[in-house]
Structures are given as C-alpha cells and as structure tokens.
Image (tube, rainbow, N blue to C red; front, side, top):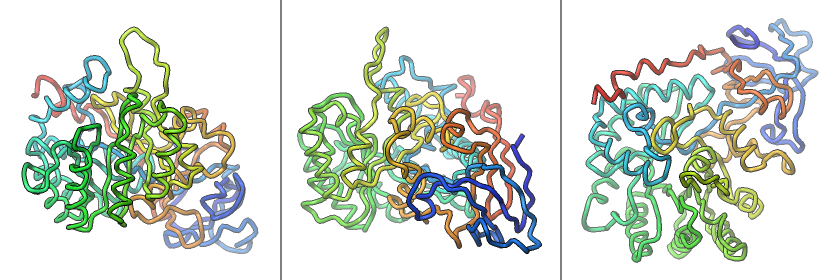
Amino acid sequence: MSFCVLPSGAKILENVTLPACLMGLEGDLIQTNLTIADGKITSTDAGASAETVIPRFDMKGAMVFPCFVDMHTHLDKGHIWPRASNPDGSFMGALNTVRADHGNWTAEDVAARMDFALRCAYAHGTKAIRTHIDSLDNLAASSFGVIAEMQDRWRGKIELQASCLVAVDRIFRDEGDFPAIAKIVAEGGHTLGSVTYPVPDLKERLLDFFHFAILYDLDVDFHVDETDDPTSDTLRTIAETVLELGFKNAVTVGHCCSISVMPEETANEIIALVAEAGLNVVSLPMCNMYLQDRTPGRTPRWRGVTMAHELKAAGVNVSFASDNTRDPFYAYGDLDMIEVMREATRICHLDHGRTDWAEAFLTNPARACGFDAPSLTVGAPADLVLCNARNWTELFARPQADRVVLRDGDPIDRSLPSYSELDQIVSKSHV
C-alpha cells in the first residue's frame, strides 16, 4: 500500500524534500511546497498559493524526485533466467548461455518479455529507457521490429530508445552482417552500438564502425572493457578515435571496469582522454558486482565498477543504470532506478562529499541519450516519484516499496506484473 493517497488533478504538496541540484540550486536537500496543476509543476515556493482553493496535502518531509531515466538496459534478454540460467555466475557462462538461447527469441517471445519489463519500470517510476539489442544471429530485423511495436504501445508513458549490440570483431565496412544492421538502426532512428575488447585490428574495426555512424549521422553506445584484465584498454582507443575523427555526435561508453585495476597513472591518462573526447560514461554497479572477480570458492576482492568519482571530477558526464534483469548476466533486478540509486550509493560510496549525485540517475543519462531532462523546476512535467523518506539515510535504508508515482500530476497504478505471466514463455518445458 502507498504511504499516502493523493487525488488526480491540481494539488499542493506541502513540506516535501527535494534535491537542490534538481532545482538548479546549490546545496543538498531543500524542504518546500510543490504546486501541481494541468499536469505540470506550477510553483516550488513554500509561501505561495496560501489563499488558493487547490487541495493541500502535508507530505511530512517526503522526498520527491522526477521520474527516472534508465539509459543502459537489455530488454531483449530480460527474464529468460528460468529457461537459461547462468551455470556458474561467470561472464563467459552468461555469454554462452545467452547465445544458446538466441534460438528462442522469436518476435512473440521478445515482445512478451519486453512488455513485462516495461510494465515493471513504469510502475517503479521510470519514464525513459535505452535498451541494447543483440543484433547478430539474424536477430536485428525481428528484435528492432519489436522495439517499434513497444515504442508505439508505450508512447506517452515510457520513451524508448534502442542500440544495436555487435561484437567489435564482427564489424566490417564492406562485408559481414554489420552494414545491414547499421541500415536497420538508421532507418529506425536508433543508436549504433558495439562491444569492444582487445583485438589485434581494433582501430580498423572502430574506423569501420564510425564510418556508419558518420554516414547515417548516428549517436553511438559501446560496451567497453567489461573485465578485470588491466591490459584491456579499448576505452583509450575509442577516445583517441573520436578525437582523431572529430566525431561530434553523442558517444556513450558503458561498464569501463578494467580502468579500476590499472596503475593509477595509466588510469588518469585514459580519464583525461575520455574527458577531452566528451564521452558519456555509464556505470552498471549491480551487474558488475555480480559478474566481476567471480571465481568459484573464492571471495571477490573487487567491486567491479568503474572510477566514477575520478571521471566526474575530470568533468565527464557520469550516469548509473540497471543493465540486465533476470538473465544470465544478472540473476536479479527489476528495472527499479531507486534500487539502482541505493546500490550505486553503497557500492561506489556516493554518500559523502558531493551533493549532486542524484543527477547521475536523472539529468546526466537524459543528456547522454538526448531525452528531455528531468527537473523539479517550475514548468516541468509533474512526472514524480514520492518516497516515504525525509532524507538520504531513510531513503536508502528501505526499498521504498510504498512510493507514489505521479504522471502528469495524477497517481498511477503501481501494481507489478506477476512472474507467473511469463511461465509459458520462459519455462524450460515450453522451449
């Protein structure tokens, strides 16, 4: 049950607690009033509207956020765990299991799982998502067709972007599958994507990749160095290539794990290049904690995440996102950005020092992807998440399962779909 009951229509939420950075102000948390009318925030003044007939509700310090942006997900993989579990929790175990399951990815199968995931995200308070789409094994045409269907079905509720996902050593300008995949991406107005890791001809493969990004005027999104191998430094080559080409469209790099286990001098050199090239970095702390430094019978020594603090200090646009949900790469998760924010805060120590880390779950990913920036300023949509917590420690101490989500100022039904709905899709007996 929600911690409060609010009506549809105009209202004044008194005594709410807002992150100052989401109001364009300095400081940490601010207590004020929010006036909502015609689906928008019309006032953030604690002394305003004293004589109005609009209903008033004392929120007793409840924290309020704009609806969230989840910029790195895998909706096509989501929820296959019951039929395709990771045998040992390793990265290679995940990779091999997903590849083996590709044969089950009909349009009907992907659509059912993708819609289920979007229903979860919507109920938790997310309004914009970018998903990566496995595009080899003849999947691109079918899965991007499902994306078009979901964009139409969820229009006005969740803005949905997609990025192809192709191993860098499969990218060639004049042969193989990638030219056709790039055309599908361009025709749908999507993002060009790849997974990079050390290969002897990495620079040539990246040049072929950027050939299509330039040809079709596309933003790009990479999975980068998702490993604890300190010699894996494809992030450096991506940044150097962007600078050499003068590529001006948005470039996002996800994971970037290996930089955290490199010598500090080497890591600092790469961070400087990333900043100079204007790359957007997205960290996936829950998935990386699950996969990285996993050895049977051995306690992990490393948290698996990238150097978020150092990148941010260098001026890099840093975000956090969900990544995988209930698939071989991550057995858990529910596309809940409050969970991501809570776990990222614990894993990456975002809880002392800077007071603007909330932007990494809202405005930063929106900027990286080109979504409208979430805001709590006057004129912003009243797409809000209200939590029964008055400060950060209360927020992160509990899952906020009783949160209230407003869209256009009106409360939504936050009921989550039952996993049993997917039984006929993902059960092993059905495959």
